[in-house]
Structure formats: C-alpha cells, structure tokens
Length: 128
View 1 (spheres, rainbow, N blue to C red):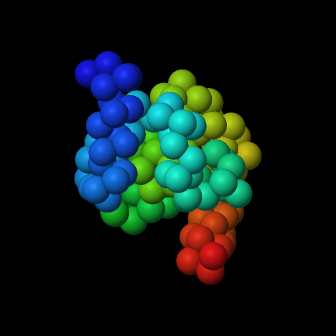
View 2: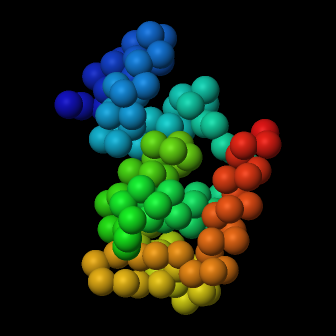
View 3: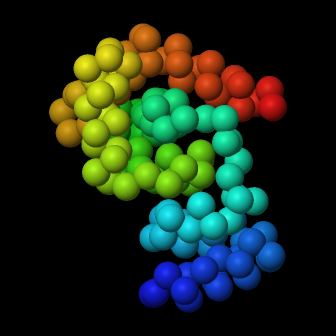
C-alpha cells in the first residue's frame, strides 16, 4: 500500500472510529501521526518516557523480556509516537546506559529506576 492510499484509509478509519484499522495503518505508516494531530494523544510525553513506559507495558503483558519490535508497537499504538526501528534501538541503548532498562536474553526489562519512570508516566496519563 502506498502512503497516499494509507492516508485516505486512515481518514476513513478515524471518521468511523475504527481503532483496529487506525492501529494497523499507523504500524505500517507511523509518519502519518504527524499529519493527523487528532491522533496525538500525549504531546507532553517525550520518546524516552514513551519507550520506558512501552517496555513496562509490554513486559507486564508478555511476562518477560521485551523485544524491540514489541516496544515499537507499544510506542506507536499506545503512545502515538512516530519512531523508526533505528531511532528506537538508539533510545534503548541510551536508556540502558542510563540505568532505566537492562538487556535480558533477546529483549529488555525495566530496572527499579525505569519502573519508577514507567509508573509515574502511566499515573500522569491516567490523571489527565
């Protein structure tokens, strides 16, 4: 599917409030988030916070280490952030050096420091 067609389909999905279709299109074309400001749910949230929270959400959901692909899906779908795989690996690497996450097997898990950021981010989302 080309970006132009995806944009048209996304407009229809937004109009009909088809969340499943919106998520499917955004996973394939995350750059469309920048064109549809109505989809930007958390403008105040930066990519680092979204990544930490994404690791935390997926770690709970999967009950173990989280692969980068799963973090990307969470960042795009749950937090409506446009992030590429290369960007995400760079963020994960930096967050690991800063002590928020740690590599375990084929994925990442939150450290105690990361869990605090995740919890406060999710609490702020719930309070807004």
